[in-house]
Image (cartoon, rainbow, N blue to C red; front, side, top):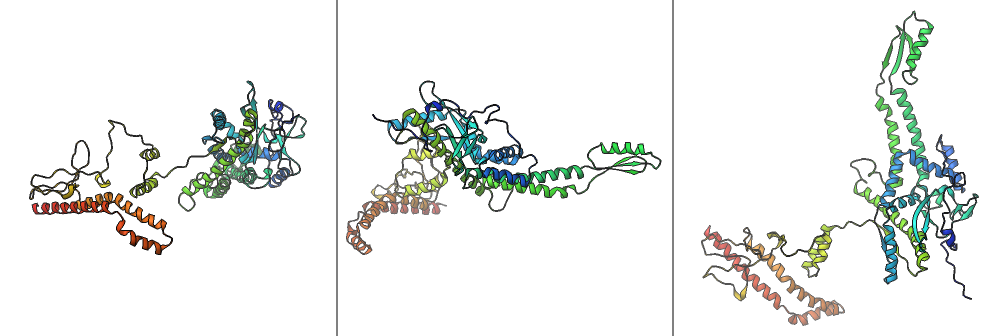
Length: 548
């Protein structure tokens, strides 16, 4: 009898398909998975915070996780930078690469691509990235088997307070069962995301551990600031009473003064009137509170985003602007790769195995932001390479710039004269000297003393002449263009000798022996045409000067 091998997850646990068809970590009213949370941040002080963190280090993370949740709710700066980091990743377009080149590989990749089009995916990824703050997160996969298939119906975020880590190494995730006992996670049922801000145990790798200290000290500063503002930011009320006032009158006056606002009240004898004394230089007295709060916020920004330039408006100085944005992009790329690896391990591979069985290769989710290409640098590089003989398809260049291929009847932009336009020669006047060997000049000449000027002409239906240009410069530009193929052919023969030679001495002998055989007829032809064109250009300039 043949025994089929069991399918095991990454922790060595076998798959229980019946268990996969039900939710195993849903909240329960009054049970061990209660959604009601405590508030350990109330009255937080250094001793209490240290006690909360020590509990987490020993495997009881409940109060630490509740504190991390409270910090996100009460610290607007931490909420903002943490949300920025998570949303920058959850909104990036996801692509899927087939595991191979077979039809089955492409079919499996298409299956994953279609599922990724769900509208709920962005919120689900945002919840999975809760691990950025707390150090880890758990997401239950709710499988849909209604039609006999296996397909993830939704990804349900589960409160990390309902999970623990094994007592031996504090690294293997466990879940609380209905009796509150620690039990292994069912195979292929959870996406376990560990994205630590530092190396070490998951319980000690969350950003919330570092942010908790900054938040506590900032809370002290804000409390002192509020007390100072309430005490000294309001005017001092002084009640005055006359010498003949009774004790009852004085009590009445004091109650009136005290009930105006706050506790800054006093009474003095003098005709029972109330004066408001304004506090001077209040702004300079409160600056240190603001500076301390801002400094703590900057430390949190550095911890979460790696920099402060994108969250705190500062101008000038080193380490700002583009450099800070590059730091944030480095963190974003790392988060993208980590999230993609988790989804491939805990979602894509289990899904394929449940649906089609184990495979040699599996589709790969890729989360990355397209790199912006420097088209200016590309233009400069490709132009020089083409001038040196590199053949490039025009459509590839158009695709780089997002340009469509021109169609019949489209208006075409032509290069300017300074961009080396295509040149033709108009026939000279009757009786004028003609160039030898059929050379075509890049300009016209006219009768002497007629104000003749060398003109360039671009090819086109209108054959209209452009503005006067410098003939020698145009001849030089034309020579460079025309001589390039001839020079390339000659250099090709020389390069062949260089490749065949064993050393420089042998190469020298090969060049000396083979020089008469190198074909230079094409270059000679081009040079002859250049000399003729130069002669005609010089003649045109002389005639123009004489005519002037």
